[in-house]
Image (cartoon, rainbow, N blue to C red; front, top):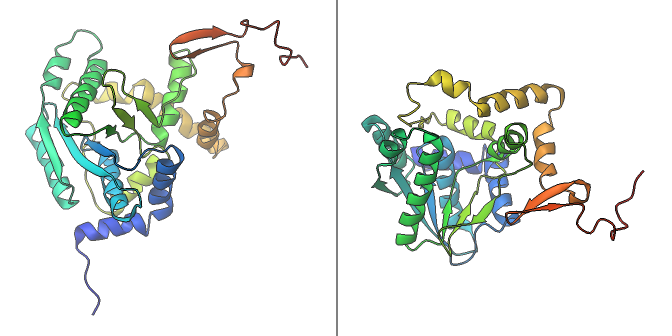
Length: 284
């Protein structure tokens, strides 16, 4: 007699079966390509309560079961001052998905919302620092964030259009203020549309934006620069379905020989440095 699968097992099966090509395969590809997880790692999976970080937690959980590389994971949730209903929703989802979360509290929303300038930047910076501190206290050497493929593309285009620089989003980084710690992004190659499809297929409801600073400012959110970029890319895809793939491949094949200036390790360099001695820079 065939054993009936429970709700969580069905959700996990959808990752391995129905959405294997869309979710599991690109997730494993990113882990291998960018060497995100190594033997002996203890990784803090940073869960915000949204669809991306919850899926990331499930993917890593399933990877632990089949990986030849032994590693440990902690499932860390920071409550920066969520409304009670939002925190309750995170707890319900964690229970349904059988993610053994550790929840700790902070006053990030209170401090950031009291800032006169750049409250969103302050909030993000404080949240990151709190997560590093908690992860280190748990013996972790890495934190994992749920940024996905579309975040990478949108960040690249935003930096060029509004930041006047060519800047990408790295799949992993050494922490600046926390020696010995790294930040990794396991969903780096996973498309947001596929995350949404998985969520909807399983009837899951995750937090959207639980920030109290923006919960009464929906119009401002939709008018944000990131929303503008999302719309622009959507329009461009109508004529070129591979536009996002092209941008992604482009940041993996940067040709510095064609740039008049570039920055590395915080230092600005010019093509004029050694230009006269470099005969490889020739005209048409």
